[in-house]
Image (cartoon, rainbow, N blue to C red; front, side):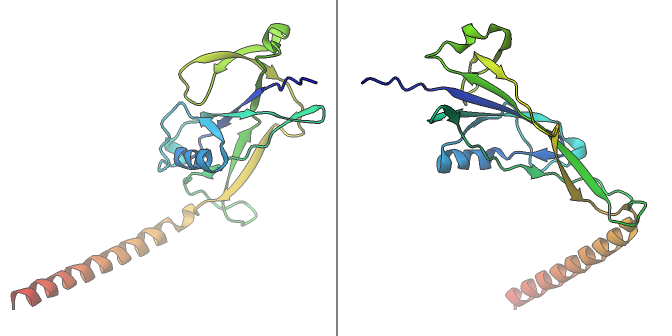
Length: 194
């Protein structure tokens, strides 16, 4: 008996909002540890705060495994939250929070041996072929149903009413550390000259 093993590829296109980021270095490490292939078409500055950042897309490529009559895979990516501006406390007195909404990904499928693109031309889209991002291929857009439109993450932010206190303490600590360093440097110079 000869069984043809189909190698279907899944492309997960995830939009990362401006309040979050995916670190390209972490994704590269995941490639070496788990074989997760990904492509980020923009330069990601992990140091930028939320208000200076832009949303971007991450493309994740996976080969589907056949289990019984299903094609399955598992994908996990690390999503980090960015620094947000301080805000006023809530009306109920609770600390200020920022909410980041990560939309559901777009799922694309390609099965070259089955010619699915020709059979489902109504759902045909063009996207990157692989993690190099050097060329584009035709994929099938897979519709799916889910109970929520996005994943929401709430993160605490600074309290804008504490601005003068934070600035005062920071200035005091910085001045104290600077004076300590200057005294230490003069002692070292004086000790070396003697």
